[in-house]
Image (cartoon, rainbow, N blue to C red):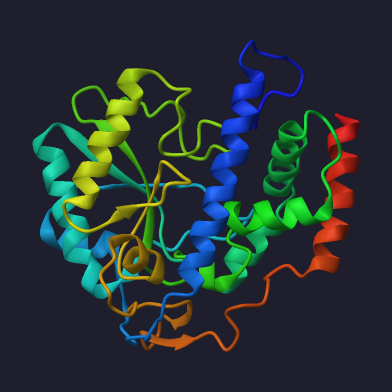
Length: 287
């Protein structure tokens, strides 16, 4: 979260960059919703099992999501070979790929957006963006669309098409620095943030090149997020094709997927978000 107590010489420039970035992200995700999707019905596969079977070393996050929910390191089955190819390429250059997150259920995505620690970060960043003023609900709703995918048709994790990643040095085990570590919510978060060192910017570019060589495109709004086969991918890649993957419920027992009945309504409705906003402001003011 941006520092709200200390002002840096370029604080105004940082705020302007963040606001411009968030607005670009909003319009990008809006364009994503207008791209057609024809759900393929393709099932999921375990990233860990596939890597073990192929003899490919990967790291996996051991943290929970939204408090007490285990992360689900699964993605659509046909994406697995590309992900393993990326891991092999990275290993050849002395890197070790870490999967921070994969598929998210609707429950996970909803609870993530309502988790007090996450919601406080959103409210805190909006307050910083407004130079300390209390953010209106409309701004919180707009920013939540980008930061926690409050609408199903804008969230590629619930489509089983995205991974969040970090990368480590094989020799010494240290993280390849991208300016900040996963998970960050500040002016350092956008892929093209100018507020990191040239070396860190180069690391971001080289990691992105490794991912995109096998089709996993970067989401400009987050330096750790890559996706393939969904509407955002097809829109950004200008394929001219309908997306293969939309938001789905997944049954691990049968490996069957069921498209959401409603992809355009918010996971956290306005009235509920207003209550979360009041609670977040109270918590932040009490700090």
